Image (tube, rainbow, N blue to C red):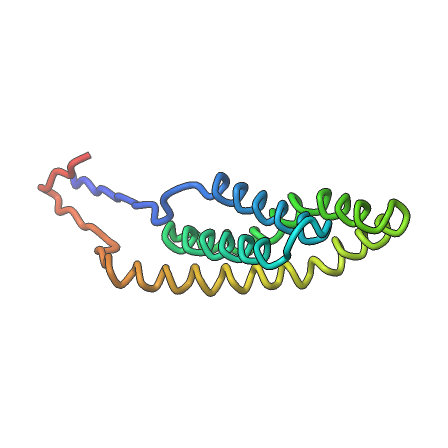
Length: 150
């Protein structure tokens, strides 16, 4: 009788829900401050861009490139109420209601597209560098008389 052992290693290590939620909150606050004209726009744009770059680095390091496709939707879910409120604060209730609706539907295509592009480029670059640095065997084969360390 022969014993066959298959050991499967999960390649993606680490969850992304916490970092992605933190990133979405940072982007939402930055977009609120930009839309409400609370202060200079440059600092908030830099903050949102830097947070997006860091999330891309994290996703690439954790080998979670598939999360890049869902991240703009998560960001949109967190940002649309504050963005709508910011439009109402800046432009008044009635005008802000319609301007905010336009901003969160059509403007988000541009914002989400930019987030997607930054995330995919950064995560791909980090993943390429990480895979070159740590090249491990994909398959481990145990013979019939070998005992795996489990």
